[in-house]
Length: 115
Length: 110
Image (cartoon, rainbow over all chains, first blue to last red; front, side):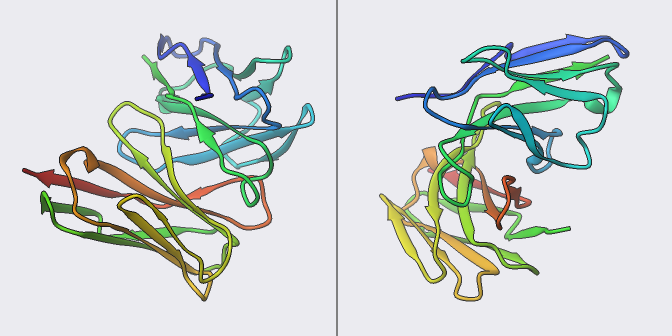
């Protein structure tokens, strides 16, 4: 069964450093997303990406964050100058169409710890 | 902004019991989804609902999209130990993003 894969599974970084989280969405999907989940809290939307551009972003997704689809398979989230409060699970998801028309499938997540 | 409130927050039940949980919002959605999350894992889709009033089953799970479009419920029949996890509802309305609920933590005792 096709699945969304994320690497690394766990990343520890020092405050102020840049991190890149990587995702390989399901191959025939057109919409890509990043969500985050702070420990013990609900899952929060960060950004959606369609047709090689950001289609929607939340208030959390400020200038510190950027996304890229550098080739036909990878989808990355870059966090510049990380802060302690960026520590969370980051989930990549993908879908064939918008979530009101097609199911969004999530990856296993990357646990980011900022120290 | 849009918020989804789930109840109960947590449930402790015995194996074999039926479970019911719900999700309510002050605003309408045109899609409701139910996800299950186990520790250290990503959310796994259980059921998707696309039409008000829709009732959909997936094995022992049944979910309904409320007529008002502001709520949804999930039932699990004859619970088993592997049902343990956190159940999240999620909704969307003419947008790319899913709004997730606060979660219901389910614990099943043998």
